[in-house]
Length: 112
Length: 114
Image (cartoon, rainbow over all chains, first blue to last red; front, side, top):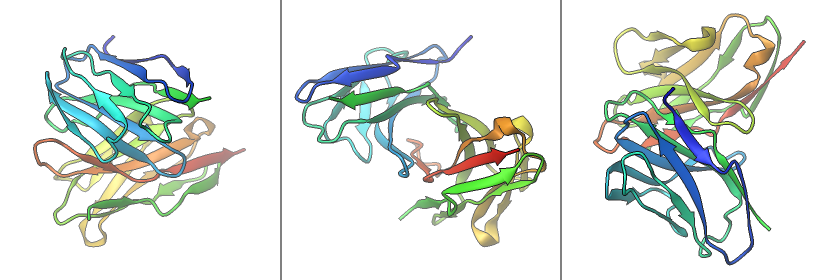
């Protein structure tokens, strides 16, 4: 079955360390997105990519980086520059025809 | 600025009762509209979407939503709630514009009591 796989489900990071969250899809979707979810704030867009080797900043890109070397993969790196990285991170993808997003099951990152 | 508002943070309904979750949008033009549901610790699942045409949209799990242009609203409804409907619900809006930037509301958490 097609879908989006995010790994790991839970991640713990020490302050000052970079960490990479994985997102893989086998839906042949063109566009992929990273959102951050905090209680009471809904979903906020971090980065998005419409095609391979191209991506754009979202509303809260500071302290994050991404790459899109393959259509199926869109990893997110949370760098030490992100001041408050503890959150639930969601990856999503869609075809370019506004059919709505397919979401992964998320990664909960905790800074310890 | 474009925005999506869900005025109810938390709603409690009895099992078997009807449900209506409110959503209002503020856009210069009519956006595409979506409702998603999220179970605890999980990703979001698309319930239904409105692009154009019939203003009453049917979705999965017995949900429906009505688009009202005059009120800039897209409220989600269900005639009879089941305990398994307890979750958080997000309204979202998107203007066609090439890069498909979606704005999400802050969510409404639904509690279902016996």
